Length: 368
Image (tube, rainbow, N blue to C red):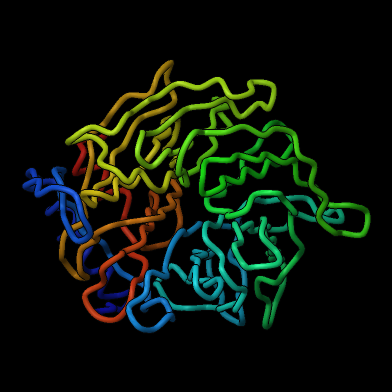
């Protein structure tokens, strides 16, 4: 596997930006793993090592990105934050912004992961939630990280949200005012929404506030606190917008159905990136390995185009399942934002995660 050093990745950035500006369409070849659809071309800056599961199995899945107000220490290493990524056969990885593994937790069959800041015992802590398909504990497994910790300070188990969902699949956090909401999506489209808090002893407390059915196999989940929207991807139907407010029930609007050159089944991961006053929704169109983008801070979502990740410093991206994005300064290498995507077919070894500079994507799509 080609894994450039941080210096080499930084040195390659100008070339990547130039490549992004000189964009053209990729020939559409139909659905299936390893197939690239129509879209402007971008290149990833760097990648993680192969996810640990051997035998080339489908293992890497969904990532999350977290950055603190000041640098933190993860397992003895100082970093602005971290990327969490699931191995759905084995557990949870914590990566640095250079792609290196900072920590691995053998936590079982975790599928989707997200991160949020939460007050615990009067202190701001980072809480990670992951949909958990491990027999005997299906639900949402919770983990906690102390941003003020030192030494061998790592992510550690915190508890769980119990649920009646048989096969937990998608997961995301969302904020409504001072409340943190945890949204779990079952494989067959069952949705369970909880309010998450901590009790006087610093243990997690959850309260279910809504349940509804999407209709068929679903996974992707992203919540936008600014507009009170909850976006869910029904894999063979399209991307829906619901209200994040539990009182909105199951009312919804289809913002994009399955459509050639827009969104090819399966519609998989969803993520939201805030860039100043603008906010963008990014989806992974697994059938043609492309990523449609909408601007969502207006009265209605506006389609901005889509991108594909071609070979460059590291190999291109195909068959993406999960993805995550964070706007603003992430690190020296990603001063305006970072998009992390799962790569289903890696060039060497098993699946892994690719890091893409948001500036490269903006340049490719012509976003100001």
